[in-house]
Image (tube, rainbow, N blue to C red):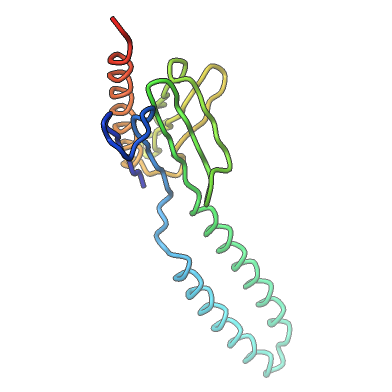
Length: 176
């Protein structure tokens, strides 16, 4: 999901040095509460069947059911945490900031906008999405790797608009 917010020069809520901000989040089609309910239903169903087989003398099914449900719960937890990660791209006339994290930024990169390029790599095959990256000198970081092809097109459009606005503001700030 791509959420772009652009700030005007006279916007009181915006920082003077900020042109816009793009927030990128993975598509989280199942909430954590729904995932817990689904997992609890699977665990209840599996253990009910395992206990029924245990009463009939097939006791080895019970430990394998416990291991299987533990692994499944671990996978749900891992995917739930991964889907909470977001990327925030903030751009001003002089700088570009990339922040990655869940509740707060865990990774923060800041580059000078003059040396920063937005690279869009065409897909290797038609059904693959394109690759969008920020590159400053020797450091390159892909953004929105979890986005769909349509979301990446929206990201590229928002980045182009943000770059044009940053260029316009930089020209206004520079005396002729």
